[in-house]
Image 1 (cartoon, helix red, strand yellow):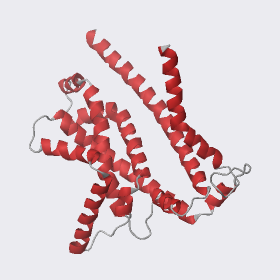
Image 2 (tube, one colour; image 1 turned 60 degrees about the vertical axis):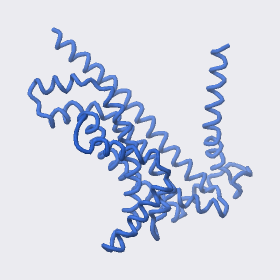
Image 3 (cartoon, rainbow, N blue to C red; image 1 turned 90 degrees about the vertical axis):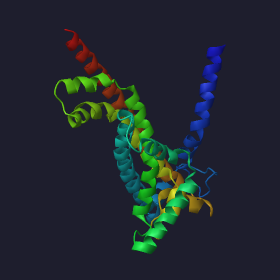
Image 4 (tube, rainbow, N blue to C red; image 1 turned 135 degrees about the horizontal axis):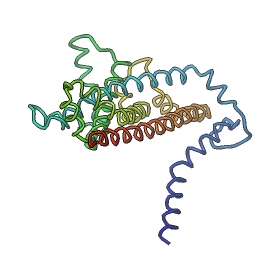
Length: 277
């Protein structure tokens, strides 16, 4: 009875999560100009999408900002997590820890408004930066760094500190230990943090709305603005393309992380075996 209930509940959750996505994909091949009325199968809206310069430009901007912000977030998140995990006492540690986690619990509206006021003040005093790609990238990186720090910190807590000690006993300098031992072990978590922050950046509407300028509208902003006037199925088409790309990336990442984890476990087991001989 318990097993049957568990299976039914799992199926219900999957249906709840993925039925809307499946419906969206199916209706992206609908020939009707009405989003919810099916006529017959067609690739009409994919052809229309290819000729929609506004959507294509917004997609390109979103991909550029998401990729760059994910790289920046992983870079700063890695060193923030490493500093907080390895160095238990240093001046400003409590402040760094609280500032690294505060964007996670702060409403996006407050973060966006705060950044907007700061950037407007800087522009008034210094003449830059103009609101656009750089300012959106700044806001997304700020939020992404907090998430990357959490993901990488959880990986650091799972790692065996004896490996670093063994490397230093064998003559490695601290930077060599980080480069040759810590960084390879952190790589799966860094990939996960990259995918997470990329998705958060690509999906963001609130921060982008506060920080964007004329001519810099991300894909979610364009979709949101069109939703108020009535969507057409070309939105379904671009959503289907995005879902396909993301699915392929997630599957590839899962295979990579699974393979890297098996390889790491074999190397650790071999190292312990060699040490005990």
